[in-house]
Image (cartoon, rainbow, N blue to C red):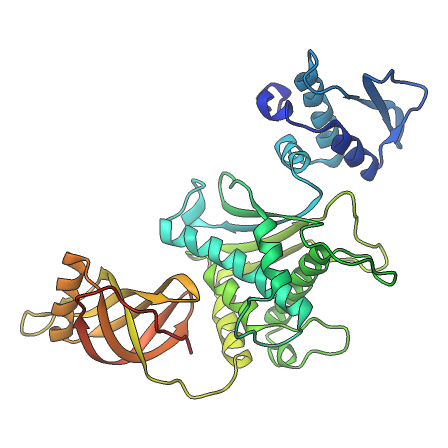
Length: 388
């Protein structure tokens, strides 16, 4: 990207100390004989002729344009877009995760609202699942509410999408979760979580590619435990359309490069057709127990029924259930003509409904089977739903 296209108001916000730390971490070497307290000069190790001049006084005349030159030099050497370098420099030292969907539905860089919300929910669920697995390596986390995991999520920042795709970008600050000194392993909690996430996704990809799902249920020594929660996060991000893909990539914080002795996966690409298998893995990883009938409360979101032989509307509706563990739990069910008419009234008047049924997860949303007692409520519903 040309320098003039970098926003000057963002370049003005760059912290010279952080820019110097970034340059040092990426191999640039400071020239101690050059510079006068107003600028710092760094040379690239491959050529003394390649230099960057970092302005040290924010707000000084020409500061933002000089920083634009620095960003462009860094981008040229790293073969990355200058906008990405600028975004990294505006953040505290962080691992950046990108969840990118590419396919027919994302060519314009935008997606349907519900699909976009699913992408955000899926990214959050995957990171939270990895954080919980780092603390407690289990195949299923019934409540992902561990303090360190939630603290990490609170500190993460959401980035922007990209053209010709739809990308959810999460910046995970390395020091989001303060920890006591550890003489054995000084790796920050954030890096342990992002590394575990990428190792888990890579292991899942290898198993799907080889069509061998059994090893995922019984990991070997030094292999990451795949959780049902992680798989469910992926299902939230199921790409739309034939030939579409979901690519998860990691850009490790430049101030803490991964050890060369233990390389970490940087990119995992999943094809749309493999998500059927991911759903099977999630089902096998969840605890085996018979689903229970529940009393459910919520609102009618969408009516998708058709006329029956008698001309009465019946069929599928989408409900928005009231769930204490989720802001928006959507579920579909099929209703007979009588219940469908009740749903139609509830939808038109935005009134809450009550029903009994068995809730199961199927792909991105949930399904309610064996529905009985579908009726309108006069007052706001009380949260009483558990997903099986």
